[in-house]
Length: 488
Image 1 (cartoon, one colour):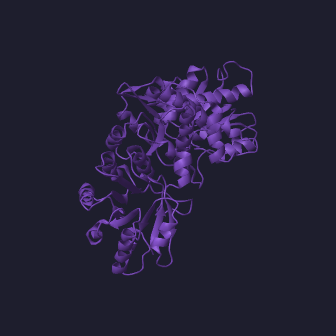
Image 2 (spheres, rainbow, N blue to C red):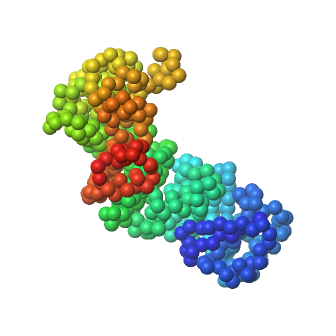
Image 3 (cartoon, rainbow, N blue to C red):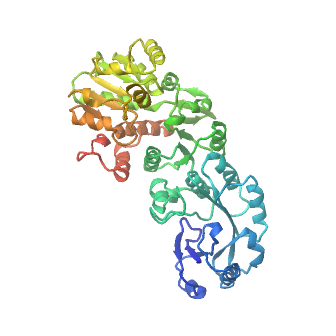
């Protein structure tokens, strides 16, 4: 069945209609409120056409003769549909299986088919698949629309807008996606600020595609917009670190917010590190300064700030960590940096882990004690900082189905922070709250972290209520007091 896609003069988003019977093209054009793209796609191209190929081509010719604004014609049949101005030809190539290695040659061929616009639609599940599409998008020789089928598709949507693509494709709403991972119109406009992007926009990369990363992109954009800056966030995959560096250079990124999985690997790109990143041997933010990539670890500051704020809220000490017994669970990058930071604030650090040798090394480095994981239940402490629950190791040793930390030992008045939680409270945090513990909500940490990241990226401070508003619009508070958001 044929479809039409209504769009603005150089449309920012397309809407989609489907006809159950052959349309009267002339009548449709007489009542169109905006320029229209007509397409009649075969099943192999993701369409629903059920007639013969001869009938389909006849319909496309009718659209051309009827002076439609744009008519989409597949590359392999482009010679069978003659040009007829003022109708403009969108020469398209679609491949749902891969991004072929000769995509540049396919693009070059499409340009020879009396194309007014070239549309490429191929897989972009990884940076490796998206890279050749990005290269084409960066230096188009005529108006070009690139549709990436997969997680990297949003990156191509946004880069296309910056580089002058005539339009993009998006689902009208959730549940109407043409393929997994396709952004909705609301996603592009509300989260990624699509309408504000132009050639002056300088992107800040945000690696990863989880809920935390989407929330980070939205909050960064809100902060940057509030400050009146042209920067906006760009979601990117990592894959091979060498290829990521190429994407960073090609997109001329001003910085990169790094997801947890890649914070250690990203150090190969950083030329300089701040003290926290050096201690953690991991960076969650790269900032380009004078052609040099400087790595920062903002999580350590954010987590420590949230911990101290919570302790002050329930006590009177000017130095709330001084003399306090702090159990740090895990031996990863977060644990290394936080253990050192807590020690510097005169906290008494105890490291717990199934990995005895690593725990011993970490404890020795920060002049702390170390205990086996199971001993955390019987070792006195009033602050619990979970960097890694080591659930798989717990399952293997205890032969239980759940693993991790059992909250039954927690006492009222203890302070609990779980850095394994993403944007919502973990089971441990919920149980801790039920047991009368002081709980540090994950979004409190993220909000503080984003404030610091904006300062490092721009040299300016964003009001806390701006980030609070984004959190409130995208994630429902976990309790009636909305305690996750911190104090605006």
